[in-house]
Amino acid sequence: MPKKTSETDTKKSKKTTATKGTTTKKRIKKQTKKIVFKIYAPEAQEIYLTGDFNEWDYRSLSMVKREDGVWEVEQELLPGEYQYKYIIDGRWEIDNRQEMRANEFGTMNNIIKIN
Image (cartoon, rainbow, N blue to C red; front, side):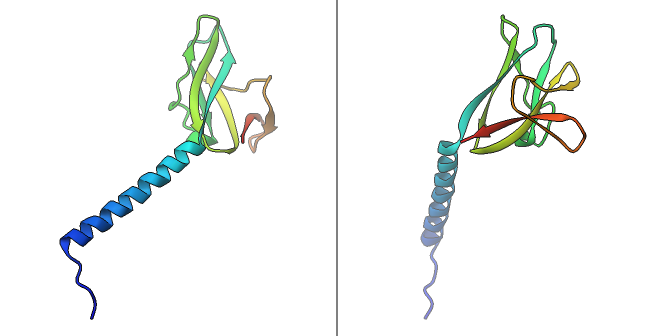
């Protein structure tokens, strides 16, 4: 005969599921690394970081300018390889001092590899 599920059993089951989800989030959080993206552009008025890690959303990661002309933003990333670019005063730009690769548009993207 099948066991009847009481309201208490259901609540316990939901709690266990929630805990498992939280554990997964904590595990993913432990695997991420804080990466600081920097670019020297003392004359720029605004810079955004965009890449495959934020679905190329060119307004979601606004960078902050330091007094020395370096712009930076911190992003948590899982291990892997990512392509990215900077939007400097409305223009798509790369940092020539960082690793890069050709993209499908015939231009270059910067590459970062996270271990």
